Length: 278
Ligand code: C2E
Ligand code: CA
Ligand code: CA
Ligand code: CA
Image 1 (cartoon, rainbow, N blue to C red):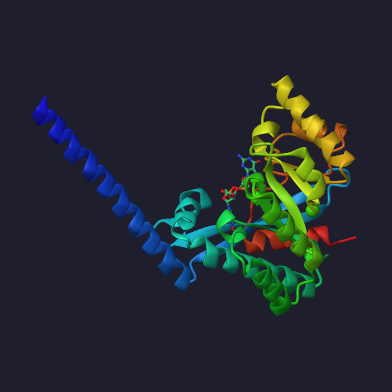
Image 2: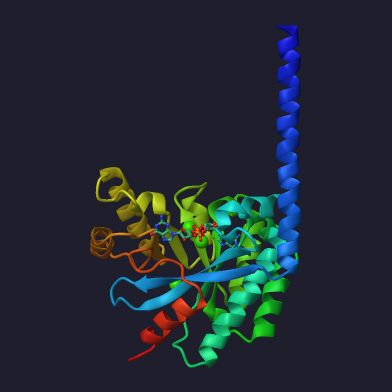
């Protein structure tokens, strides 16, 4: 038994070493990827449920890995958060999304806001407001065409979040709460934060047809958001039945595969071009 315990112990440490090594390697790779410009953005359109027009788009980062091909964010965002690389990466995403949106506007496409995801690591940096103001200045994008997506967990430190969100609102940038319903939320704070939009998490939308409690929750979030003068957008919309349900309950916008998956530059451009025709 003693022998066994020892073996287990060695087994255990070597697993930990393997994991640590793997993490270290990934951190190093991510740093190099940033230097080598291997990241790119895809854009997922957001549709007005009443008119069917595209009224916004979310920028979603991808890693064009030299050997693995296109890597989805689920496979590197956690490591980027962990290593802190999310901070310079997030700045790159912000700048690229603003630059691209401005370029589309200058090419004559109908102007719409671009949404950018903020990581909690970025959110806790003192210089973030200055960085955002700098990016808007450098790219010349009107702040009303930038929206930042934060999650409920970032609003836990109420004083910090309030001051930060007020500074953002003063810049003229839009603020959305991402994955709404999955985290900590307080209706009191919701009322006091300068937020423009709630994004109903995909996990509630997925089963609205089959699960009466999910249907009730989605209907309640829409009604509550409207009572608080907030816009609501449903995420992960995949079927016409979900669209009908959301329309019936007065949801403002939808984002999901039913409309379109996230698209590379050329793909979103052709949608935006069509969307710009009268
Ligand atoms: P998210 O912010 O909730 O983004 C929406 C995710 O849902 C995207 O996954 C999108 O492709 C996926 N999605 C959209 N419509 C549907 C649908 O109808 N059905 C299903 N099953 N999925 C749908 P993606 O692009 O893999 O991104 C995953 C997550 O990675 C994002 O979740 C976000 O948390 C994070 N992420 C992506 N880009 C960035 C970024 O630039 N910065 C930060 N901090 N996080 C990012
Ligand atoms: Ca919007
Ligand atoms: Ca998001
Ligand atoms: Ca989301």
